[in-house]
Amino acid sequence: MKLLVGTTKGLVVFEEMNGKWSVKDHHFLGMPVSTIYVDERNNTCWASLAHRHWGQKLHYSEDEGKTWPPVAPPSYPAGSLLASGKAAKLKKIWSIQADGKAGGKGIFVGTEPGGLFYKPDLLTPFSLVESLWNHPSRSDHNQWFGAGRDHPFLHSIEIHPDNPDHIYIAVSCAGVFESKDGGKSWEPKNRGLIAAYLPNPDVEVGHDPHMMHICRSQPEVIWQQNHCGIFRTTDGGDNWKLLSDPKGIPHYGFALAIDHENPDRAFVIPALSDEMRIAPDLALRVYRTEDGGESWQSLSEGLPQENCFDIIFRHSFDIKGQRLAFGSSTGNLYLSSNGGESWECLSSSLARIDSLCFIP
Image (cartoon, rainbow, N blue to C red):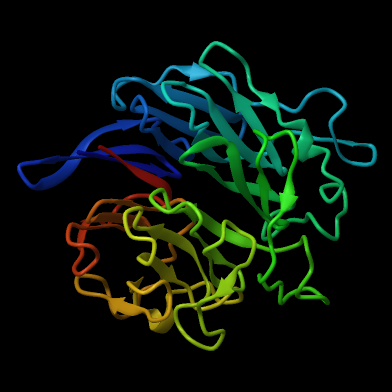
């Protein structure tokens, strides 16, 4: 098994040999790798780069990360307006997701500012999903707006495992949207979420989901780590339920991993608050629920419990069976082989980690 780790100074490939993990290779040295994704239908790996001088780049690998040919990244069509008189321009690729069609190679890409693009195969260029871009709420700056960034960004794309035309996306800030017709139309799915930073916390659009995952074995169950707590729906997004105490831990955070074989099991890695963004009590802990979020267990064996400032970003937490791995804002990389019961540090000398994923 391999682990691809995207850092602000390149892509680092870890490999397990005889039960031990070590660095196998490096790619894009010195370059900021913002997103890593593996299409499990064909083991094609994708990596987006956020060059400061040359903008966004996109690469893929069909040999488990040995070589990385480039492909043209998405671009907004001429005439696409971010606001009145202001042309839309790609700022960053935030998410990559297979389109869910068996045997296919199509992928979706979520971007900043707030766009969803589709590429049906390696040879065909990306096209903007115009139906979402032209959704009436998108042009309302009271409903779609930046959260820690200048513009809204689309960071989560989830496909129903039994129906590739059934798509969910999550945008910071706007919220969750659902399409049941392959992206021809979109409906907000934010009932029950809280936007505590707005005058009306119960708005239809204007929410800040930080990360969202659909359970593949029971796709009516969807989890999200939100700016205003941890939420879960058991009816496909019709109603969300708050699972965390606003005055407790866990509550605020970015990272989320779920057990796709058990809809009641999930993991989060909390931060103290939106104002602080440090590890609570300066101690790094993973929290696990086995009962659908009714209770949370703190897991800390092997993790630093004092003077720790690590924060775990959205795409820096992955799960594969009983194995979990996460990377931190301070370049620390941790792995658990027993469902989070204990952790080992694979490296404490990487650059900031923005994304990682296992290759089976």
